Amino acid sequence: MPSERPFKLLHSALRMDEALDALNAAQEDLEKTRGKLQKQEKQITELITAALGQKAVTSSSLLVSTRHKFRSLQQTLTRFQRVFEDRLEALRTRLDGFEDMLRKYTHAQAGLDIERSTQRQMAAALQKTLQGLINERVQAVPADDTLTDFALPEESHGYIPHPLDGFVRQLISVDEMLTHDPDFFAKGAPYRPVSFLEIGCATGRNLLVTKLSGLLNGSSYAGFDLDHNLIRRGQQALGLEEEIFVADALTFDYAPYDVIFSYRPIRVPEIQRQLEERMVETLKPGAYVIAPLAEDLACYPDMDCLNGPLAIWKKRKPATG
Ligand SMILES: C[S@@+](CC[C@H](N)C(=O)[O-])C[C@H]1O[C@@H](n2cnc3c(N)ncnc32)[C@H](O)[C@@H]1O
Image (cartoon, rainbow, N blue to C red; front, side, top):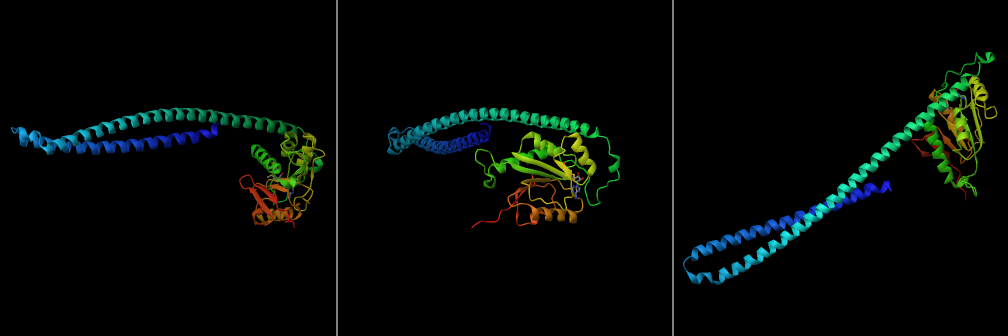
């Protein structure tokens, strides 16, 4: 498994580190013994020099004991040398293992990088194609002269599409959360079918994606916008006659919906706060809200933030018992 590789690599590096410590210890011992041996040799040489010409000295007890110590130190030195060589060999073996592991890890990492970049390119290409098709269909719907003098209120944002890949990621994440949420438990299904709503849905692009992708186990899909022209075009161009309608987010009743998407419809913070207050007030407990660039949702004790970066919230259910 690729995710285990970094741990194996770390393990291998730690083992090499241990082997290196052992090698250093053996080398230190070797140096100490070599020093002692040199000292003894010096003493023996001095003794022999002092005793030159005197045969009896060669058999003196001091010389015998020094020679004995010398031999034993030589044996110790040989032993340490062997330990040193063994440990060096162990270190080399581990180094080979480490290099092998590093090669495999680098190879696997390169494969993952290619895979990630391919996926990014695929997502971007699909997104561009889908957006192009939708734009083409929407623009093919002729303008309705009776609606041309419609203008959004000053405080509203006009149509700024939310990045589609981000929206899809949010849906996938909510789907995962619903699967593990006891409030939505259903026997024989990932979770009970949910009703989806988009606030300020424009022509309904996100709604269409939610409906057709099957990313949510949905029972119904609805969206509304204050802009009549966008709604009419979406209804005609994208076949969303039943799903999208004109309404005002500031007076809407959010109670019937399980999952709500709202990408900052209002520009003015004070009015956006009013919209959020209305939403939190009328939402049913247990409902999910995906609200990028919300103004104030964090201030409501009833709203739990389930994923900050993806802007996913849930209205808390009152405690029972
Ligand atoms: C930032 S765009 C978001 C569009 C779309 N939801 C998306 O994420 O791709 C805001 C939308 O909210 C609509 N809007 C602004 N004020 C509104 C209001 N009071 N009630 C309903 N829709 C409103 C605008 O017409 C616009 O289509």
